[in-house]
Amino acid sequence: MIIKNVNLETVCGITSKLPENDKPEIAFAGKSNVGKSSLINALMNRKSYARISATPGKTQTINYYNINDELYLVDLPGYGYAKVSEQEKAQWGRMIENYLHSSRQLKAIFLLIDIRHEPSANDKMMYEWVVAQGYNPIIIATKLDKLKRSQVDKHVKMVKQGLNLIPGTIVIPFSAETKQGREEIWELTETEFLG
Ligand code: GTP
Ligand code: MG
Image (cartoon, rainbow, N blue to C red; front, side, top):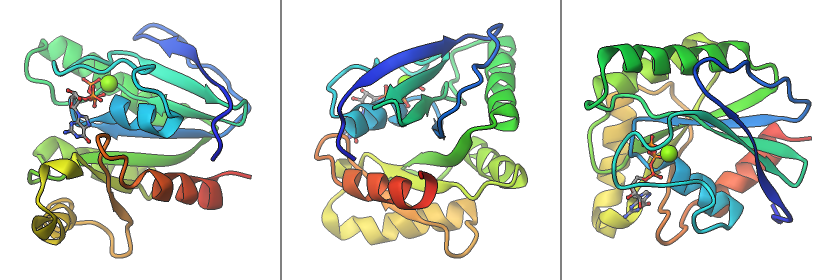
């Protein structure tokens, strides 16, 4: 994908109505701090257009990035952040659920998992829920640069087993630092979900 222009077109909070877009949407889900906004920046070739933070819970809205007037990359709020109230957690959960349930243009869901750690109970719930909605999510194993090369296969296996992935599910190791995996993600998006 050649990035010509990017635009944060719509930001939806808890009370906003979701936009009725006429272009394909690709959504990014995952626990807080896993690297969703960093991945979106890497895909857009931007350093910090999507705001990132070392403090979890940065993205608290659903952000629609218009790419070349061709498609939207949709940054979802992270789940599982311990330091927000139960009420806020429930609201975010409903927001994510409502989005996945009602977006008509949603073509693909990427579920991000930190490659260093066993998937959490929330990760498993999210995966199962996405599958129950009829999607076959693609798994992005983030922060690849934090592992030694010799550890990668073992950790990919751990992610596959931890989520109990449907056989054949694609897992792409990715690093926002080195951009490893970026081309693969765009290629898959273009061949499978656009046009
Ligand atoms: P929320 O918006 O809070 O849900 O988080 P997020 O999933 O959007 O994560 P974000 O992209 O803000 O990244 C969280 C932290 O992880 C930041 O400090 C990033 O710099 C760091 N980070 C993200 N991706 C990578 C990566 O591939 N490698 C390394 N080393 N750090 C990363
Ligand atoms: Mg974010």
